[in-house]
Image 1 (cartoon, rainbow, N blue to C red):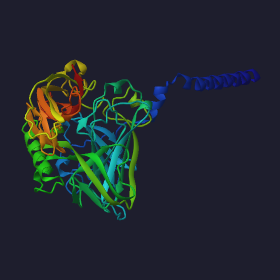
Image 2: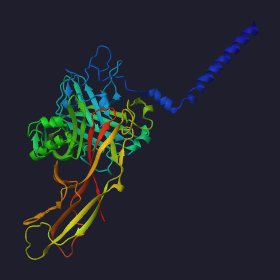
Image 3: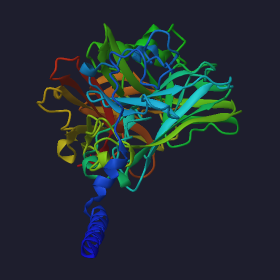
Length: 515
């Protein structure tokens, strides 16, 4: 019996010892990615196309943003633009059936338009004095992508990599709660696919602000007829007084067309050209616009999103500001984004449709002729003479850049798309005509003349320009500048599934190279 007891005791000790060794050895076989995967939270399932209510715990009911009866604090034009067939994918989602989150939001991304759209829900609360909602995105981490370069700019500088952007919407906080929508156009960056999540994240924020006036293009408006967005993390919205900022006035085309003349907040000439540009864009023509998206559908309504550079004055006092959200998020398409702790994207391809590999160059051949190229007026004292005329012959150096299309979108897959009707045109902005007293020397060029935002003289599709000017001095200047140059790119993104196409228009600053 003693031997049996001793044997059983020894067996138990060995069994315990073996179990302990197994427990200690198991964690050593778990990789770092596997540990992080246990902390990752994929989006809670949400059939947003057919749902009437958001996923919530029992006893709580929240209508989807586009439902009849929901409080919609966003442009009605985009309310019903959410169809998967049109390219919308669920990226982020905090609503679920077990617990309420704060803040509560979800986000859709349109792979055919490069639009990231956040839907933020605010629960009923005590009344708060507010006039606008301030929102934006910051990039955190050591990586330096250019994914925010389309936001707040109607003419893009390829060499600049924006790390933050901020915007203002004309919606107040409602005591009854409701939905707020913030939308951002993302530029394609191929480096995203090889960047680890530790080096790159979004910091998405929103807050209410209370400021008395917005002055858009010289006209005081009690309410803002759209959204203004500018590069930088902090708009001029603090303190007391007046400040002028250069920003992109963003709007949805259908709303702008339906507004009475004089109610957009733009100068009359700008408003007319803007509406002409929207009508032209809807019909497939590129005119009077530097940056726009025409595409998608909601019934028979075409969705339009556009930027228009403008001088915007912010006047009065900022009396209060309340934070609504300040959320760090993993960017879709990162090398190991799905292994990050916390909420991970439901869509995990790099965002954006296209970008340029480098700043375009325009070659210029400068020729000097005799004459005055249309100059009028006379000189007094005999000390002046006409320079030129100088003729500039332009050609886009297509070897200086390439167009980078996102291969996760532009492909032959059923959910992919094709590029059609690609076009690029040289743009001459604000030609430098010389006017002084009785002397006037215009710039003469080919191409079409347009007016876009603050730019009242834009030559599009030109190949040459001629200019001279009165000049005082002992030598004639070389390579007399004729104005700033840019390249306007336009094309159609045509989905392979038969969904409506999207026309994308983007304009990029170009460098001049005198040959």
